[in-house]
Length: 171
Image (cartoon, rainbow, N blue to C red; front, side, top):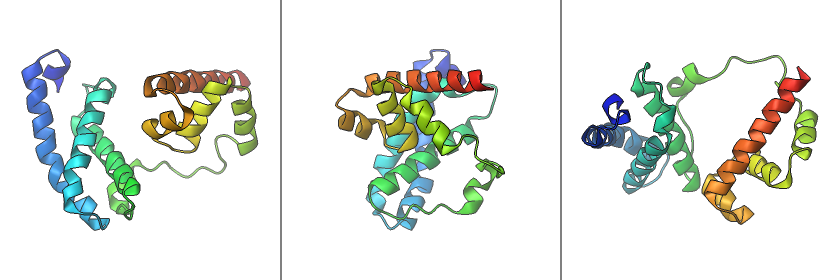
């Protein structure tokens, strides 16, 4: 992946092919554990590879790629299982190291969140609510809001940035 990030197209092709080979077995097992057909596994692998392609800039080349890829694969597999109506159970041992330590009180109270969202422009509020609060996918949220995924991503980014600035000003 380091060579691919430096612009080596052949290395990128080898990287994605290698990832696909490593992902197929684990994804197939997860899909089947959830009660779905093994034939759905290849679609999920392709979704993971697309996410890797779109998010490759988020990988820190100073760190191992395995945990980064595993996180993307876990999230995309769970999303696919939910969309297809299967059980979305994931063994606790698979994710226990990624769970945050319990906090005594939430980072933000619901009333504070509602007030902060109300101060956002309508488009940004709709994007943040659909994606960050309701947990919709970008494609579903864009369709529901009657906008493109690109415009939705821009509105989400701006809304989250505005919320971050608001939270920073309060501290």
